[in-house]
Length: 265
Image (tube, rainbow, N blue to C red; front, side):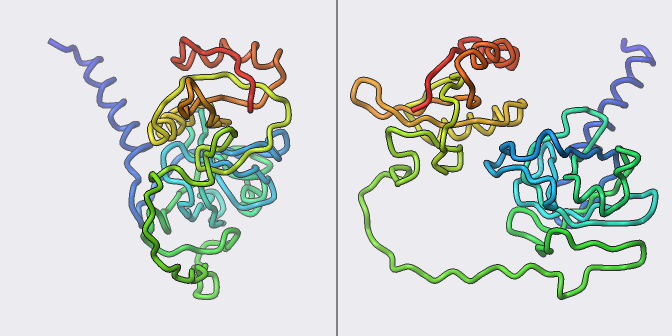
């Protein structure tokens, strides 16, 4: 029979999981520690393919969908800021959010470095109200109508019938290297670490998202050929050949035992 200490430990783990992962819909609120990341990450690619800009109002969250809008309140002083999720993290289990430097500055947490915050979901998965990133205030102030983000209306395009397969579009056209969202990438150093390869683009994209969650944030899909058929290779990083070799140990530790150095196209 399970002793008392084990029961307490199990209950503690369940509470932690609920605290970190129970936030899923508009209006949900959670409290926990937030840190911020800045200078050395400025210009690096985020998990959704953007370049991290420490002067923009964005954040990293482990699970919430990209382009989720959050109201983040520093519980020490009541100051709040609206940010958009565009990255994955933080990777310290006792923290729930990583803010950009600009966002951290707005709510007065630069000096402390870490702050206890409350995060509230304003918009996610097409639900809720998008508020302009950087909208801020203090205790007692609320979001006004002028702060609501207005989406540009898209012109309807005429429907055309095509026999082209679902994923055979200009994005992921072979040969080439793309983000997992289909953006063509300008490779600078020339080498990556191949995690796996797929004949199905949808499976490659899904595997890329899983790799993101494991902490391999710079993931590419290389669209190439194998025996005259298109193949989608999942690659991590844009490295020199030496850097790629040095990264293999890290990649294998994430579960990709067959990882090897692969030249980008």
